Image (cartoon, rainbow, N blue to C red):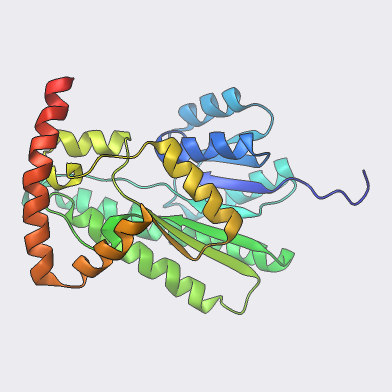
Length: 270
């Protein structure tokens, strides 16, 4: 029909598994067309095949400017445009800081902070040219505080939040919307790594499912929310703890004790 608006197009990074895959599945159900971008391209192709014609697999290393340009071009060519970038991809190398090799700390900081920045810088000119667009950053509750065993990960998420809002401030006169979302512990392969390395504080509270996180993210995108914490009530508490070092030491100690018992129960049940 003439004048009919095309369905919105979403490019999701790290979309072959975990939260990214859950977002992709739900987005296709809600009639978005979705570019499933991941460095694990075979897994991206498998998921896209399951989701049908409204899903496109994209091979993307988010630390490569060239691959970002290729991802944008492929998405626009296949779907006729791009409306929403979901910067979701991230990595973690859990363990005590001294036990994690320097190159792994460097990779964490590069992938989790600079990778999404490259993505935003790639799509912003396209969004400005078309007069609309939405940059969505999947960050973490650790962007407000740090945890033993996740030091470089938390540092990267602090940097990611600063990057997201810094760019949003620079582009505040543009037609682009910016949303950042902070999930807490989520049942993903990353959480399994944290279990292997005994990052006990990560298990102080029950983990959410990727599907539950994806549903909140899709609602935040539709509502053009500025910042969302998951769960929302914990967000206010975590921000306050992170801003008070004395309280941070006390709370983390308690959470490690609670988490150690929960993690022991988790391992015993496997």
